[in-house]
Image (cartoon, rainbow, N blue to C red; front, side, top):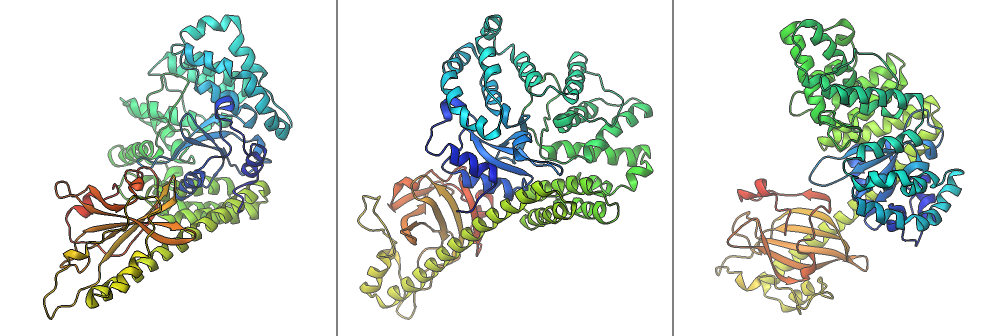
Length: 551
C-alpha cells in the first residue's frame, strides 16, 4: 500500500474500523477517497496534504504546506471542495489539527435544533477524540463542551442563524489567539462597519489570514471606483499585492459583510486584477517601474485573456529562484502556476511545478515539506500508472473484441460469437446474454463486414465495481463514423469484462437506453469521472456539444 503522507497514514490507522461521522464530524477512512485525492493533485493542489473528510459537505480536509513548516501537526487545516462541475477551491477550516473537531462543530451550529444535536454528541466526541489528542501530544474538547453548555449562550443559540458571526469570532479568538489574528479581525471589523472603507496599502503579516485578508481587500478595492489618480493608486497597490499571492486558497468573491467566509474562485478575482492593472497602464499611463520589472507582471497582465494556463507564473518562479535567489517567492509562484495549469487541464505543467517544488525544497533544506511533497508524488505516480495500465487493458480488450466480432460476422461462425459472449459478465444482471445487435448487420453478396470504430473510453468510479469504463463505439459493420453504441466494462477478478450495452434513444440523442446487461451502472456516472482517452471523433454533430457523459 502506497502511503499518501505520514499524517493520513497515522490517523487512518488510529481510527481504522471506527465510525466517526456522528461524534467527530470527520471521517478518517472513507470509500472513494482516492478519487478526491487524485482530483486535488490533478487540479494543481499538490501544496496541500489531504488526510480526512468532512461528511457534512463531502469536502476533503488537508494541511496547508509551507516552506518552513516543522510538522504536519502544527499547520493550518483547510477544507477542499473537489466537485466535478466546478473548479477545485480551498478555505481555511482550523488553525491546526487540535482545533479541527471544534471547528467542524462550529460549521454545523446553524439552528437551535442542530446545536441541541451537537450537545448530545459531546460525550462520544470526547471519547473518540482521545486517540487524536494523544497522537498530537496535546489538545482537548473542553472549550467546545463548555461553550455548548454555557447558560449565557443558550439564549444566543435560539437565534443561531443571526449569531453565526458571533460564534465564528468566539471560536477563532480562542483557538488562534495571536497578534496576527487580532490584527486581521480588527481590520475585518472596520470593513464590516464601513462598506466603503479601504485602508492605505501596507505590507502586513496576518498569519494564516494573509490570503483571506488580501482577498477581502482586493474585492473591496475592485468594487470602489476611483474618482481621481490618488484613489486609483490606492486601489492599484491592493490589487498588485493580490497578484503576488499564491492562489487557490481563501478567496471569497462576495463583498465583505461578515467574518464567516465561503468558497470562491481565485481565477475570477485575478481576472479582475489583471483587467484593472492593464487598464491603469493603457488608460492612465500608470505602470510603476517596480511593477513593470517584477517577474510576475507579465503573468498578471496576460490573465485577462481567456486561455491562460500558468506558463508565465512558471517562468516567474524560475526567475525568482535563479536571478533573485528568493526561494519563498519561487514557492508562491509555483503554487500559482499549478493553480492555473489545473484550471487549463495542463497536467504537464501541474507535474512540472510539483517536481520543481520538490527540487526547491530539497535545495533549501525545507526537509519536512520536501518529505511530504515526495511522498505524495510517489502516491500520485503509482495511481496514475495504475489508471494507465487499466485503460490500456480495456483498450486491448475492445480491440480483441472488435477483431473477433468482425471475423465472426464475416464467417457467421457461432463458436466465435460464443467466444465474444464469454467476454461478458452478467452476474448482476437478469439478462442471460448481451444483445450486440448482430441481427441488424446486412451486407451485399460481395461486401465484407467492417470493424467497429472506437471513439472514446471514459473511466468512472462505481459503488459496486469500484471502477467502470464507458466505451463509445460505432455499430457493428458501420456505414459511417457515427456514434451508435456504448459498452460498459468492469474488472471482474482482475480482468476486463463487458457488463452492459447501451444505445442512443431515437427521441433525444444525448440520452442512452439499456439494451442488456447490468442496469446498476445507469445514472451512476455523475460526479464520479476519473479519466478518459480519445481515439477517433464521430461525424455526429452532437458529440462535441454534449460529450455524452451521461448514460
